[in-house]
Amino acid sequence: MKRINMIVAVLLLGVLGACNSTPSLQQYYVTNSENPNFLTLDLPAGLLNIKEAELSPEQKESLGSLKKLNVLAFKKTEANKADFQKEKAIVKSILNAEDFTELMKMNTDFGKATIKYLGDEDAIDEVVIYGDNDDKGFLVVRVLGNNMNPAKMIQFVQALEKSELKESELSNFVDFMK
Image: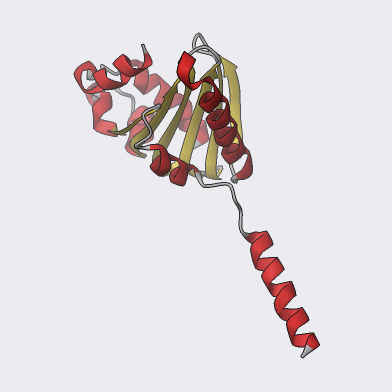
């Protein structure tokens, strides 16, 4: 009997130890979709309004692998400084805990940014762009697609440069971040 109890206890500890208290990025998006400090947007690839006739075959292929973008933005105010620090730490822990591979880090006009991806080098399913600014807030963009290729990400960026974003559809986001 003692041996059975010992085995059950070891199994329970193993199961509890395997459970991760850090939510996935998707769970974090869903949990905060109704939080007034956040703005969430799901943008279909068509919203980018890229004129495909002006794209090279490589750019068309890169764009074709893109399905949608999920945007989550936290706007920092005087009233939510503590929440900002807490939420920023949670997002960073999620991005460090999951199986993301870092693609690059950069400094932008907005602040520091990191680009990471999930999947194999030849078949990326999700790219995550995270940026934060201690004065303005932070932004997480999930770029979802099928078999995206990091070598072709530059083609995607070049295609975005030819984009004419539909500003009226993004006005909520622009107003939120002002």
